Length: 194
Image (tube, rainbow, N blue to C red; front, side, top):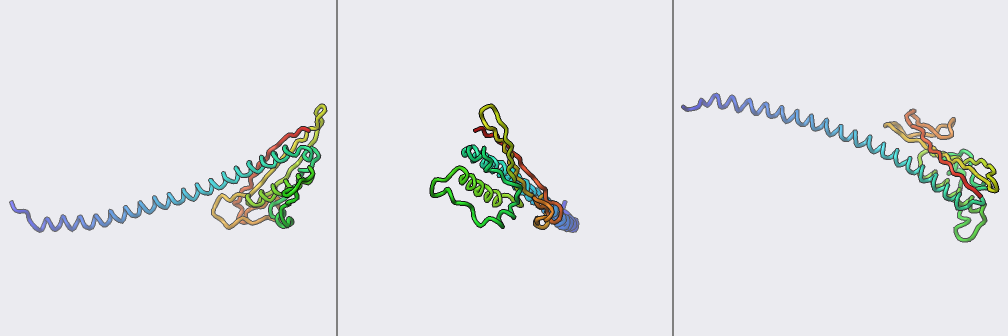
């Protein structure tokens, strides 16, 4: 039997139209999937940066604690105490980091000034809208003096797509201009015996 050419034409024309719709729907689905993937990637990058700030705060607190441990004479004398300071205020007031102990020997109190200068510069440079304080309490423990230091480091981390965080005049730490910046802090303590 010979096929009818009119039926063959009808089947071919129907397939062409349907195939174009399939391509458009497929492109729409792929586009939505790619947009979703890009959004997840951006969110992941923000969380990764927040984790990096936390790691830096832990590292900086440990750095100062080790500096105090290495300079016990100045640490027990209270030379490492720092009142609440913000990164912006520190950078505005400090002309440059101390280099008093770089080229020659120095006293324990001069080394404490040098250590604090280096440490505060590092905190101000690495954490956004940083703030810090170092407090000390002393107690006698038998024949030794026990100095308990509390190191507190704070920073502001943005968690959503808004304008850049701006310093708040009423806060020692700072806040975000749109109210979406989160304030974080890390507190470490170290006991030094002399």
